[in-house]
Length: 190
Image 1 (cartoon, helix red, strand yellow):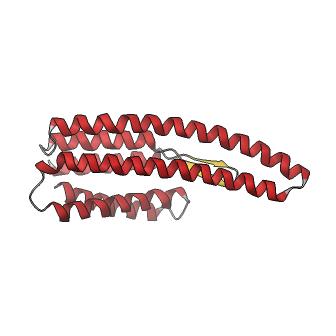
Image 2: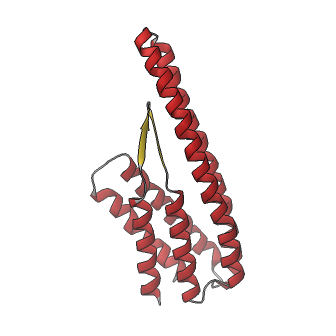
Image 3: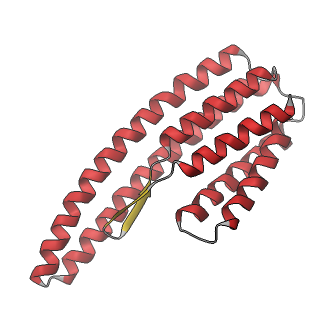
């Protein structure tokens, strides 16, 4: 069963990395991985149920929290895109008039809005992760602290892989980070 879990986790990670689309907006870039997160969470929940790790209540709780967050993330993405489009038009007008300070201000606002959106989604994701871990914790073996630390390190590794792919570093680096984080996740679950 652990091989099935590993394959599903790896596929979920690959989907999450491949669905990230960067959208240049002024000086800011933001990525939309909300639906990838929902797909990866669904795959992980399914795999945990197949291995007998998750209870039905944990699955329902996780889906009940994850799906609205994905919807909210999509709405926030659309809002930030519209706002950045408006700021780009204002920056173009300011550049043609020779107001470099206004151009910098528009670009700074674009970065700020993208940062606020990302921070809100990260906070919601952390709350979701906490609910999921607390719902599944009763089904895990007794040594929960070590397993939770491994899960946190794995999520940090996944975040590193996403950032490496986002900023266009050498193509091997994201896969190394992804492989390490998937290995830690498999150790956490298996």
